[in-house]
Length: 325
Ligand SMILES: CC(C)(COP(=O)(O)OP(=O)(O)OC[C@H]1O[C@@H](n2cnc3c(N)ncnc32)[C@H](O)[C@@H]1OP(=O)(O)O)[C@@H](O)C(=O)NCCC(=O)NCCS
Image: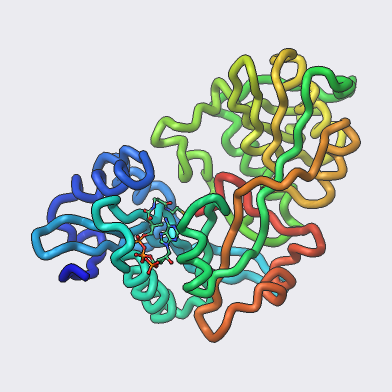
């Protein structure tokens, strides 16, 4: 194996080397200003931000970003380590770079008192073999709900109005989320302005175009974020305080894009909302390749025990698309 050093982000001489790494491995054009924006706005990134392998001639061969994520378990709040944007340059692949980095990461998490390392990935990727070798095991599977245009439309509840989002709604969205997730577990502790904290600031998230608010009288009862084109409307997040408001958000999407398939990512939903989707005539839950993995940093990983800690089998676990690594 080539001679290399493992360093943190601020020790990399040229941040464009990190940009190139993410571009080549993940098709993620993370220009230095984008990385800085992510670091400044998403408080889940640790102060070291990323860990990388640098070769003797200064190439950043591999690396990933580092997170510390607050979660809710059946035994209370627990911070876990988060591994984000795992990447090895193709010209350095299969030489043990990522295995070395991951081992250093696990030590880094242990030194910070963390008992678990978590990451979200796709079961289709070769990376799964590496994660399994490193003793990562399944925490949860990603599911979707789907309805095609040939299927009956969701009835429009008369008492709930659905409207577009404006900047004044940011606290409303946060409030609805906090209230809706109160009795569930998982990745539910968000910063107060999570839209900004996640992707709002980078411009990838377009709430004015895509976020819809459900309200009953003057009270906001739910919201949904839809990414739409003529073939598909995809809900990255749909959260509501009651079944009618949830139904109103589905009916709104079906009406606004009548020829499209409606897809709802269920990762952030509990069995309660999955039931609401079923009531509205959706096929659900349908398994996808998405998977959340967890590794115990103290001894062998016991997937069953960790699922139980997070209420996965109880149907009370949430790991929304905006909350993954
Ligand atoms: C996944 C990835 C990070 C692996 O990095 P790497 O530095 O090549 O990993 P390592 O050399 O430490 O691999 C260790 C072991 O993992 C397994 N492994 C790694 N990549 C694999 C692949 N593509 N297919 C099958 N097994 C693989 C092998 O068992 C390998 O050991 P071996 O080479 O002795 O057989 C790299 O292939 C990559 O960046 N892929 C594209 C981006 C990506 O998929 N990231 C993960 C997103 S969650």
